[in-house]
Image 1 (cartoon, helix red, strand yellow):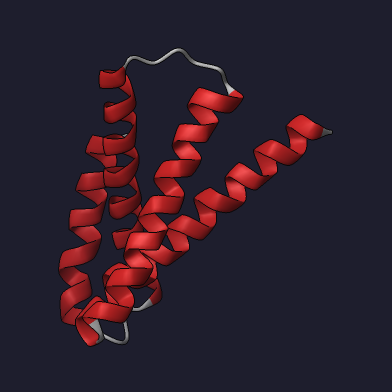
Image 2 (cartoon, one colour):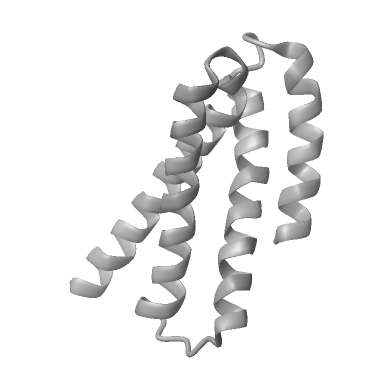
Length: 113
């Protein structure tokens, strides 16, 4: 039960982080400080969730370099997925901006994966 709860909470952190990243990326042109803050919190949540999942729950022994790579890949993956999901969800608010976000998000998330 404890393991299931831990994994569930990590997934909540992942998805909450991605939701905040997608909103932050798409809506930042409308209020840079507010949505930049939301974006930053989302990135911190997602990368922290990735780190905890790999190092704490899965007990992987990562070197400092591997830990930095994990965090970097987590951040770029979150940004790419956030660009895709945020672009789809908020197309109506800024269609021109979104036409750049979605394809760029696909490339970033694919390369990060």
